[in-house]
Length: 490
Image (cartoon, rainbow, N blue to C red; front, side):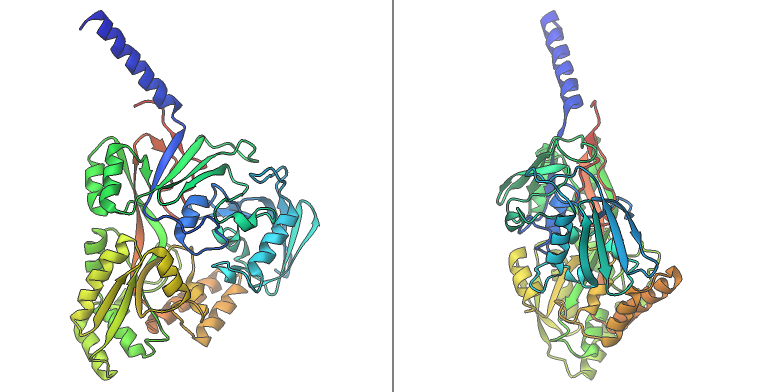
């Protein structure tokens, strides 16, 4: 080797080492593009995946282990009767547009979220609030209609973030929050770019720039990771290729759990006979769906509750795969020539799972007409319009069994007994009693066969092996970049 070549190689190595040490930007892959960027005005999980803890913050927040920790409120206290919550706000917080965040913004945000004309997708989180007041700029007092030991948990949801009246009207496309990153650009159909907000009240993140790149096709996602066009794909859409990444030292495969109960949702206003819903549930072979649609990643569930939760009850036996029972139930219900519509949103678990379920239903005499939808159409027709018979979706919100107490929710389950149970749960603080109530709730919806319960969505991610701090589990739908950094060196 010539001396000149040796010097060139050494110089290149030094440059490469410096580049590794100085890496401070990241490109995150996401399968779905959010319909907007306002977490207080949309139901799509992709909104929080971009904005939670990055752009927007609430009074409290979820940590990576699911614990509720301080957010914009540095502390809080609860009155003896459980009705009055007093939040002490952090000093020196400003929005990305330079305006100060104080108690007036909190009052505005919570009153807006609970207003009669609110478009908040989780309006029920705020239903128990009787009054919100601001005795001074750094204090917020929230009065509840009834005690709610879960209130700090409710305030940690992405739907409960604090927004400003000056910028709220344009948050869908030009979001302005208080988080450690500020919005730079949304290239529709391609990506959203954020950059570090230097006036952030808390510890500065290691990253100075983050781009969320939207790649809907699993094959394209694989190619982008392999080519280095994307640095990390926290929820990778092609689990069948994970073995390739696992064998490649350039990558880390990150497998964890999520709050995503993946269900075959049934429109209970159309499928009113519990025998038909029960037949559909027994026609389903969960493991075949997990193997065929998720390549073995996923935990079977028999109710709408995460298996990693200590209050979970395994009820899978009550809807075990039993085609003969399904046929008998359909005959008993006089539904032997049943034909149902199945609306499938974009995720691969839905598209792949839908084809498998359609085949399983066909085997017991139920025909399905499948319609593949983009998220905007699914949200409009299925979630809001309730125009469907069957659909497949993962409910990634944490501990959300209370949605079954909302008769106007998209699957339209209306059970006064369940509603009373959830109301009692809301005012119960004793841990043992709460466990009993939560387990009764799980059993009730399983016995009513409200939906076909499929599996708990696994969090299967891929990242450049030099990246540290990505969440392994998903206690909420988020790509929290506040603790993410690049390890120096190759």
